[in-house]
Structure formats: structure tokens, C-alpha cells
Image (cartoon, rainbow, N blue to C red; front, side, top):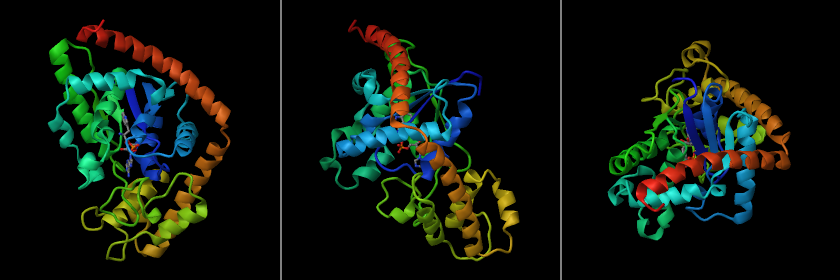
Length: 329
Ligand code: TYM
């Protein structure tokens, strides 16, 4: 990746953030921000595609901003802002709805199919249209790289298609972005079902570890995590997906390489391995939470205000070109 590459990514405030969000997304951002121009958003208009309690939503928006700060995103260098504060996101989403996106594209989105299930006619139009708002987020900032977990790759692919179609119609307005997923931990799986992604919306609270879970709760969840048959420690994602998932979490939160971990744990049983993993997770959470708790709401609001002003300048500049290109100005 070249220096000063433009980066955009975001998280929607729709539930407790998990170590899956951290491993798949936020930890990548912390690495990338050093040499690049980064914009990280709390994408609140994505959260309202399903019903949200207003007071909870407000709290979660601030907590996600605090999470970015506690994880090590530097607000002096990177822009941290709340999506709804920049009207250009929804404006551009509307334009892209009309040029660049077909119904067939959105019908193919696996996340929509998973979320809507057999109730497609009963969900909000917003849930269906959500990838277009995501495309607008990315394209407004001319992002070249979008660091995400694997579940978002399809949406970034769609963003590329939308941008190319728009450019074909109106000239080169948009940069074509690329998704970037981390090799280990692009898809952290549920602790209670290794065939499902670890998700903040998981009904079984045993399936995920929230970044704000207490150490005792986190330890209990690790000790209760399902395991595969077999009793030695080995990395085999196909035949032993549950153990492979635990090894990935261990490696990423403990800063270790998987082959080395396997070697060091040879001869140990699941119980002993899980205890060591729980220690690593608890240490990570304690460190994270100490930082999180030291950041005040006022400080966070200030960061968001500053981020809003910086993001607004970029987004407005881009919108001028887009409005001109389509002929409304
Ligand atoms: P969201 O809010 O569901 O998730 C935020 C980020 O966390 C990653 N992630 C995971 N990575 C690995 N393992 C997991 N179990 C796991 N769960 C979540 C996601 O891949 C994502 O990177 N539509 C997006 C938010 C969004 C966005 C954007 C992202 C809106 N606009 C523009 C990038 C660029 C979403 O719902 O992510």
C-alpha cells in the first residue's frame, strides 16, 4: 500500500461491539492510520435500518467513538465522525439509488437475505437499500482502501460496480475502492456455533464477547465455548473450526502467531488451553476498558465535533462535483 492512501471505514451502532469487530476491523485501522489519510465513521443511519431505542442509540454512538479512541485511533491524525451529521451521505445515497444501482444488485446481497430471511416483504426499505448508503460513505471520501471484516466484502464489491457505472455515465468522478481484510480473523466465529459469525446481534449472549464484558463474564464465555471432537491442540479450520476460531482469537488478542501457539500448546487438553486463552482475553479487555473508562463524554463530543467539521469540508467539495456532473447545479 502506498503512503497517504485514502482509507474509509465504519461501524454501525446497533449493539454491543464485540471482539469480532475489534479483530476484523478496528485493529486493522490502528495499524493503517500511521501512514495514511483515514476517515472512520460511526455510521448511525445504518443502524436505523432496524428498530432502535433512541436513548440506547445515542449512548451507543458515543460509546463507539470512545471505542475508536480507546483502541488507539488518533483523532489528531484520523477523522472520527458521526455519519448523520453530514447530510451528503444520504444525499449521495439517493443519487446512487438512481444511477449505478439496480434492484438485482441489492437482491443478491447475502447480508440482506440473511437478515430479512423469509420476511423480505416485511422489512424496511432501508434494510434493502443499505449497501447503497455504504457505497455513498466510501465514495464521498475517494477511499482507495476499505478495511473491513469478510462479511462486508460483498458490499465493497458492489460499491466498485456502482462507482464504475456512475463513472461510465458521467465521467471519472469516483475513485474505485478496494476492500482489505486481515488474513487472520477476517471472520471471527460465534463461540457457541462456529458455523456462524460472531455478531453483536447474536441472541445467545454466550456466542460473543463484548468489548465491555466484565472479565468474569468473558472468562465464563471462553470456558463454555463449544469445541470440536479431538483432544489435542491443532489448527485445522475445515475439520476443527471451533478450535481454529479460538486459536485465531488467542493469536490476535495476544499478539502471537498461530503456528507458534500450536507448538507451545502441544500435549495440552482443551481445558488447559481455554484457561490460557481466557487469561489473554481478560488481559486485553482490562487494558481496553481502562482506557475506555478514562475517556469522558465531553472529550468524545469534542472529537466528534472536530471530525464533523473536517469530514464536512471533504464531503461538500465532492458533492459539488457530483451535483454538477448530474446537472442539478
Ligand atoms: P458492522 O457494524 O456490522 O461491523 C463493523 C466492522 O466489523 C467487522 N466485523 C467482523 N470482523 C470479523 N469477525 C466478525 N465476527 C465480525 N463482525 C463484524 C465488519 O466486517 C465491519 O468491518 N455495513 C457495515 C458498516 C459500514 C461500513 C461503511 C463499513 C457502513 N458504511 C463504509 C466500511 C465502509 C456494517 O454493518 O458493519
